[in-house]
Amino acid sequence: MNKHSHSKLIIRSGLALAFALVIGTTVRAQSTLSMKDKPAMEGMTASPEKLAAPVKAMMEVEKRAHCQEMLEQKQKMMAEMKEQDAALGEQVASMNSAPKDKKMDLLAAVVTRMVEQRIAMHAAKAKMDEEMKDHMMEHMQMGNGSMSPCPMMKGMDEEPADAHKTH
Image (cartoon, rainbow, N blue to C red):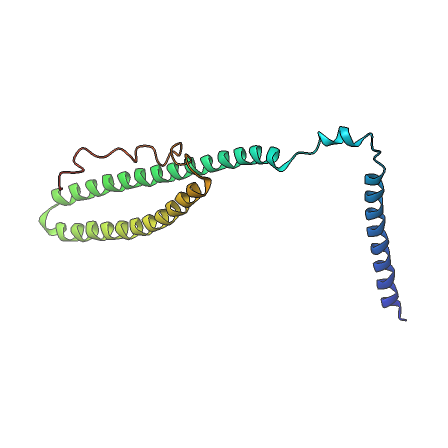
């Protein structure tokens, strides 16, 4: 046997021995519990039902945090749109007050900016629609009553005053 394979054999044997010692120690520690210790230990182990409530509560806290995060994302998008509208308003105002020979260039700049914003808005809306669909599926999986406390749902049931004018 060459020196290299002999070293591998020693390393593997050592690892196997260490593994066996760990397993043996764990088994021995568990088997040394006497019958009088077992009733005291029973209170230390939790049933799946006892574990389910705290886990479910923790999941609901995480879901609500996700709901709040989505609401903040929507509010940020709305604020960005207002900023864009204000910038376009300023750009149109400067175009309207510009001399006749510069109006065409300024008009082209306004239209270009509007098209860029519209393309970006459609991409952001598509992304948000997908996230909202996933969000709604999460609520459906959580069961009845999970949508009403969601910040994204607040105000959704309120209809605009002119909602039914067309029919």
